[in-house]
Length: 289
View (cartoon, rainbow, N blue to C red):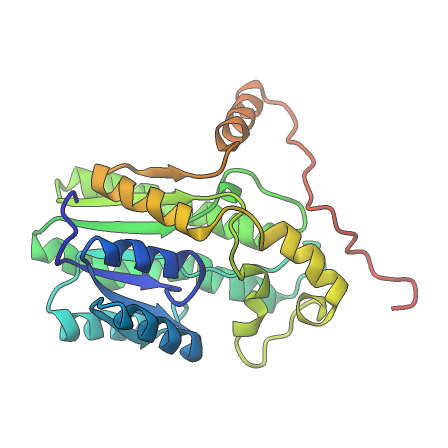
């Protein structure tokens, strides 16, 4: 999709992080924007900021884990702008902890957003993209973690691996059907976002395995180092827009992604045992806990 000016983009998780950076970058290309986010306050601030800079933008509070909510987002997009050309399945959450300690609510929450959110976005929007018969594009925000599971981060890594698999299958299907719809998978490494504070948007009544995700300042420091620091989200957004224009599937960012991928592929090709990779925190219960 080499021409973006005047076309319509929908971005889930659009009120902060990579989603908001994508809104900035796509708006600069002249696209009309629909921001979807579960956090109403952040959504209102993002819409006010973007519209104050002269961009055409509407905000729709959306829970990507709820297909009816995603269908309502699609309807709101068509009501506002008449068409849709680009859908970015970007919303994502994260939790860390030992596999055997994580609660079932932890698993359901991460998969509902990171995996089912992608499925819901495809189901809610791709039929319209096909019916329109115009150039379009689907973006999925995955991660380098899609290709390299990390200890104590299994829900996130595995959900992002599923997002990769689903998106690559979508690419094959849309090409086989000879549609004018491109597909891009965004796989950043560490990015400076607030994903380490994902707990703020957990469903009411969820029972996490530990309150340390939100309550322990020392834990938060470690979480920020692991998940909340890295390259600016604007760099990911710029690389993604370039890939959309060039109709490229993969977007990798960061200085060492090619070494990371080469090591993973070489290990698989040789049948070697996987590397032992954790993110360096001691999550074992304290003796007096």
